Length: 148
Image (cartoon, rainbow, N blue to C red; front, side, top):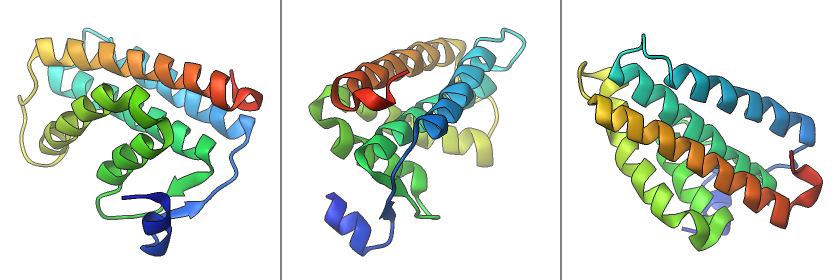
């Protein structure tokens, strides 16, 4: 997959992001990471909330590259794949991890409960925070006008 294919399939469109738009995304990520750390939440909710922070982080990278995902069906999968295009190899291992988490999050939100263990929830919270820092560093290096 490449940007040309995503544009042709109408799963993505060109997009010029702004610092205020990214600040809004940063606030959502901060909220979700804080919420995912609440011990009162079930492991499933912690997992799904941390996953959401990672998904928004992927969308930040995509926006900085000049695109946004428009697909309705499969938009989470496409966002993770498009983030690979944006970040190159720097986010590859984390994006592989979040692709596995995407399937689990889908079960949590739509078909089952008690899917995630506390260990898995703790791990995804840490990985989502790591991914956010990686993307912020990438933004500072490649899109300095948009850095926090």
